[in-house]
Image (cartoon, rainbow, N blue to C red; front, side, top):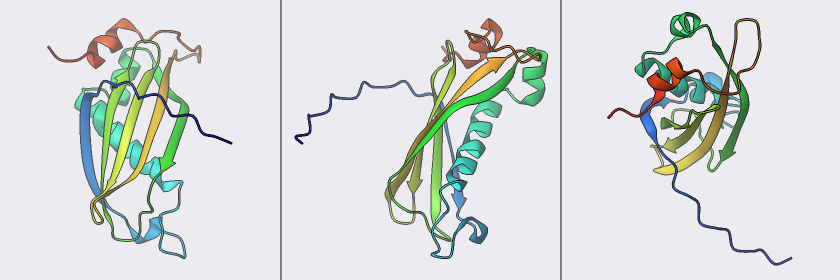
Length: 148
């Protein structure tokens, strides 16, 4: 089967990008000394928390806004294995926040100077009663908007 050429990717916005560096701990690897795939989501969570805290958004702030955030979609594309004691950089940025909060990630293997993974999570806002909102509330959009 002949593969069609892929269309060029549209450039995505990188709003409020942040990065953190980690070293792969022994308890994150399997018997082959490779990071178990599920631990990548832990690294993404650490970066997402840093990103949102950097914008002044943490658990208490969402309660004050009377919304909660829930992950409604996530995916990770593994590009190269990470191993015990590898240094890595996890970068996170907001791609969109109008209806859902789309956060993209890149994990760079600093030890071997190569990309290790790319990923995304999509967060939806829900009311304290559990009703999903179809648009990110204005007060939250103001916090997520690019700085002028």
